[in-house]
Image (cartoon, rainbow, N blue to C red; front, side, top):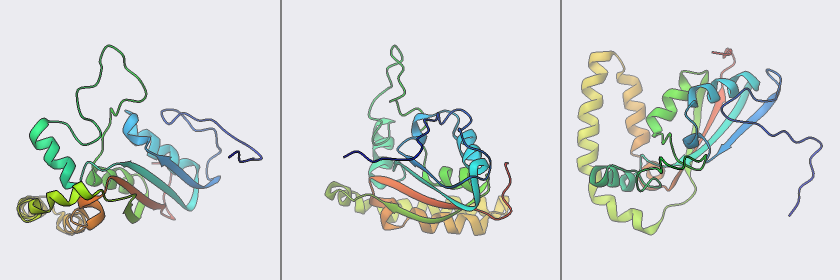
Amino acid sequence: MEIDHEEFYEGDMTKELPFPSNSCDLVVSIDGIEHISKQFDFINEANRILKDKGKIIISTPNISSLRSRWKWLTTGHHYKCNSPLNENNPTPLHHIGMISLPEIRYLLHTNGFRIEKIATNRIKPISWAYIFLIPLSYLFTFLVYHKTGKKEGTSVINKEVLKTMFSKDVLFGETLIVVARKKNDAKNV
């Protein structure tokens, strides 16, 4: 199916995007952010081109899922990044910047955005096999977040992240879909 557009722009997520500042209502990155090394630069650039209250939607493989965490523990590789990358043949298809939900939140919240929604594309039946890991994972995560929250003064943030990390979509979803809005006072950070 072909869709006609008045204008079409090709851009590079690692460079300045071809739009004036404060000119876009929406930026969408579908399974792209894990392929770039300059993730902060991309989010900063999205902030630059978005109008006040504009939105960014990011989808990326869910390495915060129990299935991916288990795979990391047992193999040193996350789900969707099963083995060492081919150093002899680098390609833009490589997942060079796999990013967890807490890292996405930090990336967005420190660059003028606030997360409004977190969802997933689907939950595969195999993901439910990892449900037995929830109590142990929750206990360890709670203890670490509680300790660092007291030490660093981030208790409120840590509670919010803990709640989100143990939501159904994050625990079992295949792909994270994060919707964030540019804050009114957000400037090019």
